[in-house]
Length: 140
Image (tube, rainbow, N blue to C red; front, side, top):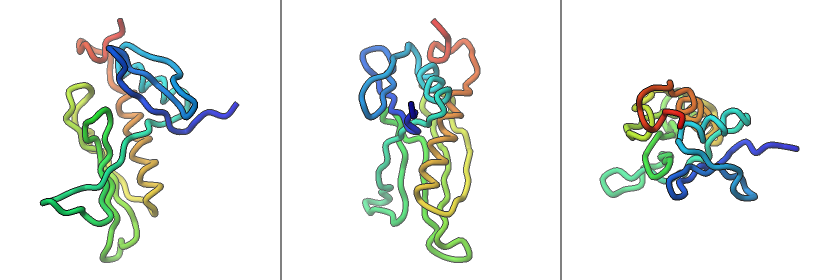
């Protein structure tokens, strides 16, 4: 059996549901548990992607990643200079449902690689959240 490399996590009632293309797989009490399930299957979160809009204008070669309705990262194509044609990615989030800004970033050769790296690193970042007193990371 081949596992999906990208899995969606959504909020259903008071639980977090993990699904692949064929439908729901399992649900969890916390976002951290759901993301750990994704990571432990060797998959990455399937983030939602949209265009970056600055001052009412769509920025060229610039896309924002969102997760559960919150901005979590960005990819940008380099258009000028010695890095022209490469893509930068970075994680940036302040959502209280998980740890704040990660600051992880990188540069790759294609847009698809940038999407994959950001999704993979964000998945690991959330899955590696330390257990603690937060009601969002504590096991019930």
